[in-house]
Image (cartoon, rainbow, N blue to C red; front, side):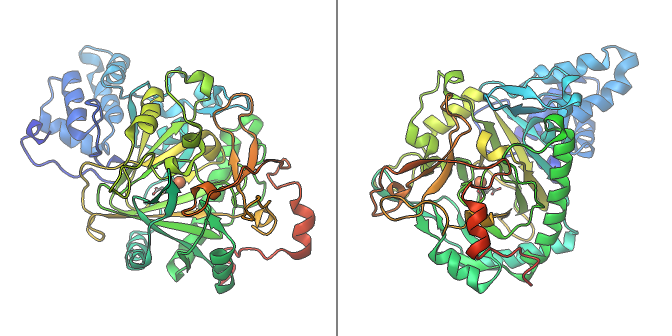
Length: 490
Ligand SMILES: O=C(O)CCC(=O)C(=O)O
Ligand SMILES: [Fe+2]
């Protein structure tokens, strides 16, 4: 692709970080593709000039088209036509900022706020990846909001350094798939506040059916940043409720309480091939409609999201029950080949992403992505493997990601049902079956634990409107040991 541009390309910063991810789609908008589109729209402007404008517009073809179309309006093609032309080229859509989709309880998509209804734009097309950079577009097209340059630069760098050092202690998830032990394609550790929680988390909490062996105590910087994350996440939640949700009310099962993170998963992706496949985050301890604050540090990577389509809307794609609900897809590992730790089976996950279209959110260093309440039940997300990456001055090829989470006191594992194997069950939401879509269930997860068979335990999970289990309130008053908020426990 570099042949297209004769001089060295500048590195696009922050939101505009140039996408260099692996893709077979020639329409993926690398800087080269963006330039090609702009050149075809504005043939009178030199390539170098267009490149400069593209950089100054933070990589947004949309903004360049708008800027130049305004200037160009007197000289021929009207601005609106140029913008439409951008949209029709290679699936890059313009003026994305005003179309918001949500899934109603019957699973149908609908625009969510007044602003959205004024425009008639569509979600990503089948087989296309829609790349989003601007916070407005991301909020309009996905259940996420993004804050670029979230921390003061020095603080972000210091946190990155601290976590790079911590990453020496990270490990891969091990789990069982098709009778083989598998390792995740990136490393991680879970962080909690106090030594007691550390003990509890290691012995009582499970993740994917196995006890969490890799639990660590939050570092001072993780804690101090959590305060800032807490503040912003709560403000984003309130904005989302006010501007986007029907009647300006929180979603059913969403917690009405202040979001207070008490656990963090820290992931390390060392190099371009490390990744996480399409998955939804486990609800077992977070409960229904959880909000997650996800801070990215180091190398910029693509966070891809796609809406989960109910089965009868998605008939062209073959489905496998285990894959839909299984841990395999969680980790981007769907099938194993003998002799390898894991093999990504592109067919099913990628086929769905293709059939439905997917959205790519670019996550530069020091960006905070808020995954809102509708995200885990209605969408899947992944970190795509990249063909190449731009090394970061501090972390080299590595990206660190922190997902701050709020585990509900009412879902402490001592309250949740046990299956016939005597293990804690996991909480899942029916995502594809049309008739039961949106219902929650407790299930045995033993079948995914290395060396365990699992049982057929299944029980529908009932929650009140605030997403607490119906058994929760009574028991909690009696004896609940709760996870401490990061900031409160210092
Ligand atoms: O690395 C990321 O941005 C996402 C990580 C993730 O999805 C997870 O920890 O569940
Ligand atoms: Fe996740």
